[in-house]
Length: 373
Ligand SMILES: *[C@@H]1O[C@H](CO)[C@@H](O)[C@H](O)[C@H]1NC(C)=O
Ligand SMILES: *[C@@H]1O[C@H](CO)[C@@H](O)[C@H](O)[C@H]1NC(C)=O
Image 1 (tube, rainbow, N blue to C red):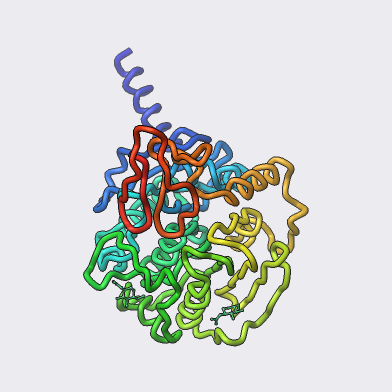
Image 2: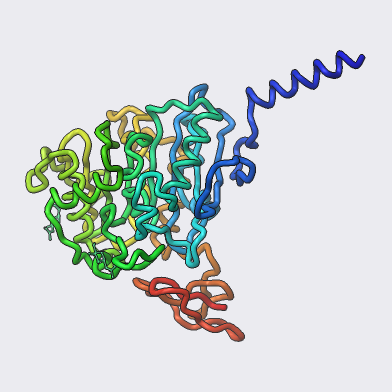
């Protein structure tokens, strides 16, 4: 009897190892990973019901004012995870206003002890727990999450195989001259940080000095009407990665009009870099889930957008619609020209109401975020 229960205890222990930890098909916070998490970044993940045997991983990084939860429900990656069997890691910013630290020396350095280091540790932990396919580890994000995507690609080229940035700035562009953590940089935001491809490439290579291995391929989305991170950030980001890969940024190898949407222009600069310039689109470029799956190699590059299933296309429409409104709709929100308790009421690029409902005051957290408190 005693032996039997020991045996069954052992067997269930083994089962727990082989079939681990995280509850499937819902967003779960990981609190017991034991990873080094120097800046206390929130660690959330989505493991699909239909997990691939050697799964890929996508790190999906939220915008300022966002959270892991908001990006989980406002982006198509969890739905796509069920279709393709990969795991999604949603880091959650620990900073006031929930932007990412893309300005300190720590975060702009490989194993430097900043947010980038914390996120990289989440990825390596997940890779080992789930025996992930190291050739399918990717990063993407919107706005501040797109800045962080470029930073992750620059600081951890050994981990990531590809990155997709929706409306960011070049890696290192937000650097703070005084070493500030999570600092705003108006020069960069307004598109006035201009450098040669070689100078930008040096910024990237200095983040992981001595590294000579492969680097992730990159896809850069930006809207021409972006009033938060001015469109010249598209050009500078393209220059940066062209510098890294040795491509000529003045001479795309191909230009596709109305791709993937009407008024979007896709420029290829070589096998490792595409820019997608969205004419007339503002700061919120809607996530192109089907395109992302092609770029990451989960789906064939020849499949057209007509192949998306009704369920996915409904979700994508929902995302596109909610993304077209301000990305802060999920955090508080406003009614009738007044902003509810906790809602955003100001900050760089903010075009919504600046009036709080009775009893609350619009309180500045930093240059890019004020909240009704
Ligand atoms: C802003 O970033 C640029 C590089 O893009 C840097 O030269 C400048 O010093 C930064 N500004 C501040 C105030 O830190
Ligand atoms: C930025 O790139 C776009 C797309 O190639 C181009 O139309 C635009 O003129 C460029 N802007 C600058 C300032 O070079």
